[in-house]
Length: 203
Image 1: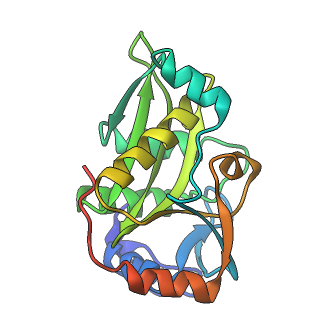
Image 2: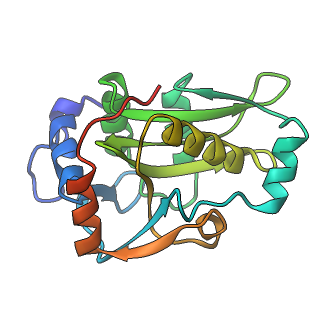
């Protein structure tokens, strides 16, 4: 799919630049299914992780202390990570979404964290978009125990080291709540976007 030919459900063209502009205004695109058209969303509430609330689940901390069983990398295979995240019976990652975010990755805005097992197989990962000092996490997957959780832990360590202010988890889930995610309203999220508009290095 050529990103230059992608349109939303109303027929308006969507390019990587349009997606970036939308994120700066608190919006993001999602599809109804793997073959669905893109629609824009700006939720009334957001789940975020700020470093004052961040915590590592005890079980995960033990795994990490005992020399995590996976090799964790950054931006080694972004296309494989987003494709794996889309491999579900129900998904919002359409072919158009995949093409747009791969293009954003090539432009240096979207990033992935990967987990590989001892045999070199990709067994977990997550990806998202850097918007100023906020990293907008999009999706994750795992094919082995704790693989995606370790990727989130590694991601947050990298964000902290590079001066990012928070991880935007979009929707609250029990999984992310264990990392300290909490909910803010749309107005507060908009203020955070303004406060942390300065670009930060990711890799």
